[in-house]
Length: 141
Image 1 (cartoon, rainbow, N blue to C red):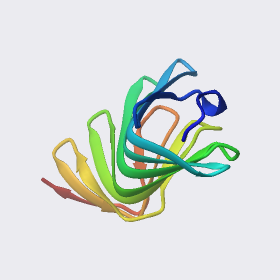
Image 2 (cartoon, helix red, strand yellow; image 1 turned 180 degrees about the vertical axis):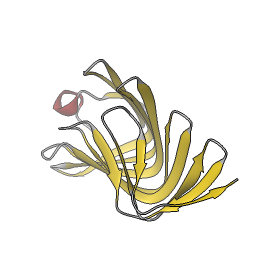
Image 3 (cartoon, helix red, strand yellow; image 1 turned 135 degrees about the vertical axis):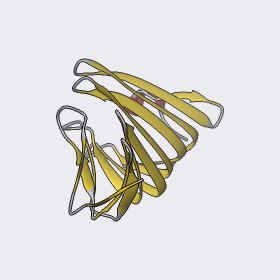
């Protein structure tokens, strides 16, 4: 069972909701299920998160997430979708680092941006909220 005071989670049955002031906006996370199988690990399923980075809203959806409170990192697995501005991408894993408000992946990525399709060897979200691709191949849609 997730302890409310440990990380500020609000439990709603088995689902959870979490909101925290973050820089110039808020971080909001909802999940269908939350479990704490180990002392320093919280497992979430069907996660939806959103936060502002620069002037852009970054939205992240994933099937599974393992949150490690001590390192302030969330490890996203399964189908992971990220949207920022006019860019959407999908990957099998990504990491959210709450200490520096970042999202990144070194896994294969595919997605769309303004009339193009792309594949890449990873991505990160920069300080302005833009999804920056690593070694991308871009094609017109």
